[in-house]
Length: 141
Length: 490
Image (cartoon, rainbow over all chains, first blue to last red; front, side, top):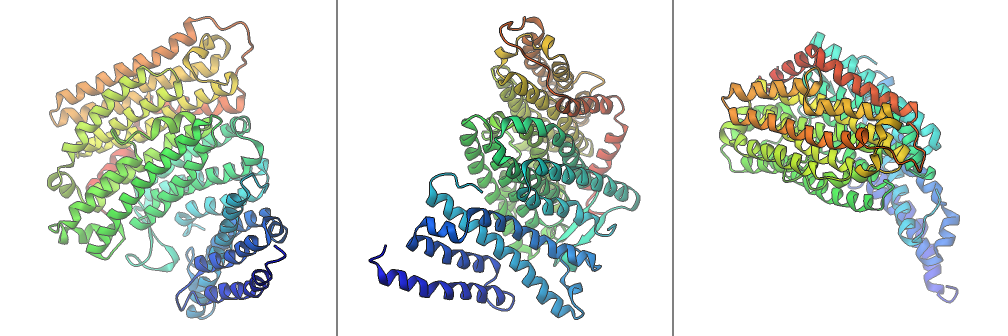
């Protein structure tokens, strides 16, 4: 890989922007097109690109399979957790109105929280799928 | 917590599923047990509330129906939720040793996560009042079921799971097409709202098409003959605890969906008079009872034998529904519960045999009546129920079915029910004969299955006798549930 300078430098330039763009899609998901699923896929795409250019071994050092596995489960906990918080605060499951003094703000926080859960799970599962196909062998979680 | 109980019934297992995936195998079992026992407690508490206060409506996210997702709990669906939760709660102590033996340790945590997700999905289908939510939960339960089946020891489990995946996905897409067509015509996804709006547009060709897609999709999920082809292999090669759980719950929930769509959403006038559903369902269920019982007689693998018998038993449930009368639907609902008990017990007994012998082929079971007396006695108990001997739940189901058939003046159909019983006697006897009247192979030691597996099996066997002798509770709940379904929404 050492001789493909443009590819390596180009990738290094691109990855931060891809990650930032994923977060942009995440935080604008409640007002514009986008949301947690798309953001999670884009976030995972950065790691897939890294793995393609620098090799699977390096990618596993950056993001161990165990972490992607944990992310996959953690996102569900975040999503459902938002629902539990709203129940503790006296609303129904996933009633965002009670999350802040102003219901409009509450809806805003609620959506962001839920979408964050989606992002984490989609990101974790996408990377885990990529590892599973790229590795062709069991990767210990 | 009281107000949120309808949501908590579903979302406590939903939260525990990822937790089970994150902790180790042993802890994952404890988490799964907590999820199952919680859902049993919550569903019984909800049943008492429904009986005392009538239908419960819960607004998900605080959005009022029909705009938001509504959880609507009446007697029909809480009854189904109790079946699911009860079987889950009995299977989970059984699963600990059985799964430890049949599934490698590193997959244990993921297995229990899938188990809880499957429970979540089935409970969700039962309690939701929103048709799209039904589809989402259907996918949750089906996808987790595919993965659990694929974990079976035998390599053929992989193809069985893949086959089920393809057939199940076809069924799920038919269901979502049907839901989409209804949404296009009415602009609503809420079941109660659909029931009001569908008659206004029933003349449009789209509605019969939606009805057809839904019927075919759901009958694929519940494995009505001739759409049952995924079932025998899936049940045969899945891990024993998974077979016991899925055989007693997944198809039952699909039968409930059929009832819900036919009677609540479309209404029995549209389903039975305009679409003439009984003309399709009755012949198919009769063929299912006769042909699948016949196929079961010729099976050499006892789990496979029981799987074909399941397809025949689903025939009885659909036969009850196809009468379209309160008595017929009551018979169908009672058989839902009763079949869950007896098939659960039978598959659990086979799991015990699998644990001790390592095979469930009929020739390996020679003399097991002497070396594994408790397991085989449980098998005989469940078998008596399957045949429909008086004082077992099978008798209660068949009594109601025959009554419903005679009410319609359908003597030959009542005859089919009795012939089905005789055929069940033949295939159960095949196993009993080998187990009790042949001598065991003296070459190798076989010991009785552990108590943690025998006790859950016997709980189901005991229940199948208890509810066979005193059917007043099940019969009254089932009759009220049938009246709720047929009488429309209260």
